Length: 307
Ligand code: 13P
Ligand code: SF4
Image (cartoon, rainbow, N blue to C red; front, side):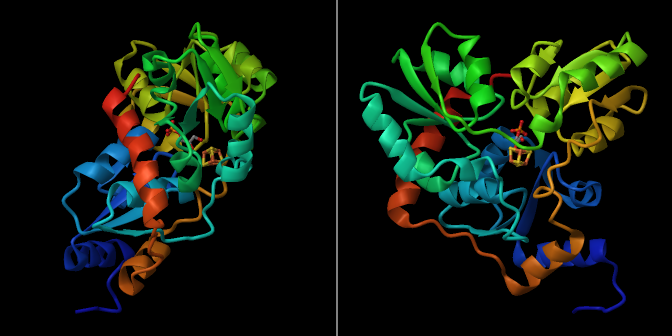
C-alpha cells in the first residue's frame, strides 16, 4: 500500500518489489540515481546486465540508445525510460538513409557502429562496439576496410590502434568536445603527479595528452588498481561520484567542470517513481529492426570487453 509520507528511496524499493523490476544506471547519472540503482556501469556492462537480469521490468536510467539496446536484447521484458527526452545528440548525428548512402560509396566495407546510435542504424550495421571494446572489435574482424560510425574521435582513436583502413563518420559528443587540451595542461601543472585518464570520445589533441584512454568502467577499474593517488579525469563529471565513493583515499580532478551531459542528468528519483507507477515510457522496437539490431549487438557481446 502507498504511504504518502514514505520517502522517495523507500517508495522506489517498494515499487521495485511490486513490479519485479531492476534499475540500471549509467555512470554519468545523478549521484542519488546511481545510489538507488541495482547496477551502475558503462554501455558495455549495461548491455550485458540487461541480458543477464531475471527481472520482468528494466528501468533504464541513461539515454535513449541505451534503453533501446536493452529493449532490442530483451523483447520479453518491459523496458522503461523515465525521461523520454533524455536523448544522446551524437546518436542523432546519423540516420539509416545517410548510412546506406555511405555504404554505397564503399561497397566492400564492413560497418562497425558505436552503440551511441539509434536501433535502426544498428540494424543496418555488421557489428556494434562500445568505448570499452572498439579496438578489439575492429581487430577481430576479417575485413580490412571499415566504415566506423558515428563518433569521429573514437574512429580516429581506433585507426591509431589497427592496420585496417578506417572510414570515420563526422559525429561527435558535444559534452566531450568541451574538454580542451588547455584544461588538462592547467590541471597537470597544479597536480604534476596526477595520472591523466580520458574517454576516447575526447578530441585527438586531448587524447594525445592522456596516460590512459578508457571507457567509464575502464577508468573505475584503473583508478582502483593504480598506485597513484591523484587523477585528472577527462570525461563527463558524473563519473566522479563513483570514483570518489569507491576510492576515498584518492583525489579525482575533473579536467573541466563544464563537461556535463544535460541529457544524462534528466532522470531523477521522482521520474523513476513515475515510470514504475504509470508503466511509462515503454520502449518498443519494430520487430524487423529489432532482430537485425540484435545480431549486431550479439556479435559485439561475443567479442567481449577490451579494457
Ligand atoms: P561508456 O560506455 O564509456 O560509459 O560511454 C558512454 C557514453 O555515452 C560516453 O559519452
Ligand atoms: Fe551522448 Fe555525449 Fe551524453 Fe554520452 S556524454 S550520452 S555521447 S552526449
